[in-house]
Length: 285
Image 1 (tube, rainbow, N blue to C red):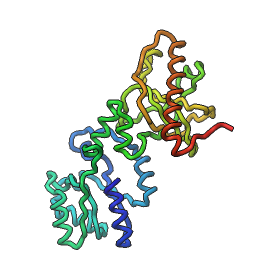
Image 2: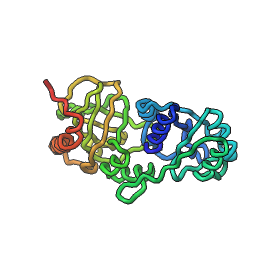
Image 3: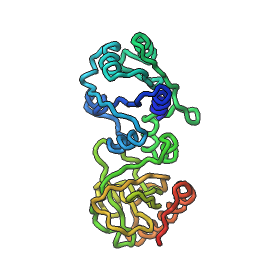
Image 4: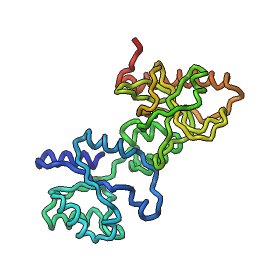
């Protein structure tokens, strides 16, 4: 985001159109057949960039992976009419990662393109990176991950039918299936925020396989507090606010129901004390 914000700032000063270069898929997929877990779906990423007014230029990694540094500048930057370029401190490009920010600046200067290199974005003495964010999400450090992201981590996915066991206990859930490639946070229960039809609601989300039920299907199950509409098949956004507890096997469904009620009360308190103050809680008429 800091690189993109710099790009927008430069564009406004120079009366240029801001654009971001994206690979059609993660380069490591073409190199090793496996890419790191994504923090965003492509739809989410495109929506964020669109909201910023940034054009997307898509590039195929296999088509450029063997290019020399100067060839890359000519084929990608000059061909797309770039007059300025922004990158991070650890940016690498061209064949065998031979190009670094200094290489980029030198070649761009030769062709009349201004290059801006941004320093690492630091948080509490540590570099903010997708690797660090993934690690925080996998270990249940939700607040830390959200701070590094600059927004609550979330996913926008369709609501699918479940076994309706939550409904039978008085806690209906919106069930969502994580797509392949999207990061799955640490299994457990989270205070969350659900966004449905443009409105935000406090919620509590369980991510995992539900050991008490005896399921082996990985699901995100969200009980949207104070919400009772039918949203099957509809895309909703769930944002994780705080990790409450790990998955637990309960002796019976009565004990599970009591725990869900406690989780919901704790989630509501976290929502009202934090995110709820910023966006306003939607109260039932």
